[in-house]
Length: 301
Image (cartoon, rainbow, N blue to C red; front, side, top):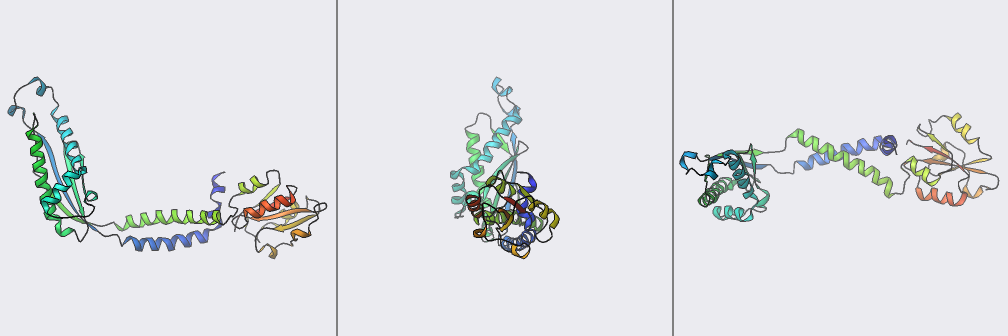
């Protein structure tokens, strides 16, 4: 199936696509403002190596890469945010209960030696931001001190820098996110509408049901098609009788009832419209007439 055929459900329903896209986009944009802003606290510090003059000279120490060692320590510290015990220590120290606290506290290493801790709180939790920040620094200092106590080669940490801000989703991000979601939901909805209503969506479906049957493709909208082209195709059959498989065809063609066709004399010519003809109906017509028929497929709405 080539790309143009795959996109045919969209090209047939351009007006429906854009109407649904705009309406759904407006709804999603309105719902996006229900997402609350959050209070963000960022704590930044750097891991420092202790001067070699302050440590005993040993072969093991002289062979160490100080920067690489400090980088490993920074990575270890960033992992503390994933430790439930560490998070519980922070909440116990602050004497607070914050729901889903593991999703609101995070840490990451940056540029090997730098560590960023981030605390994101909802508006009703922001009143506890200072208390939680103090508790976090206190628990961190204690854990870092314990680590250094048991470490042959201790490390230092710079004075933490604390920054606070109130963050909200930028308008352009909202529009971009809403546009993407609206597009995806609209496309999926249009395809699902035809699939679950047993509609013929693609020309390839017709070819699969009637693999040996000649098919005339009409790419103009119904009523604007070239009548000479249809006449030339229809007259290639002996005693052609037109059978419509979608409503409204009787406005443009002289149709024959299915039970009025003499299979010994007449040749059925099926009029099919993508997006409206039902697959089950084509399979039934195949069972009645076989593949000794003609098919005209209207590809646009």
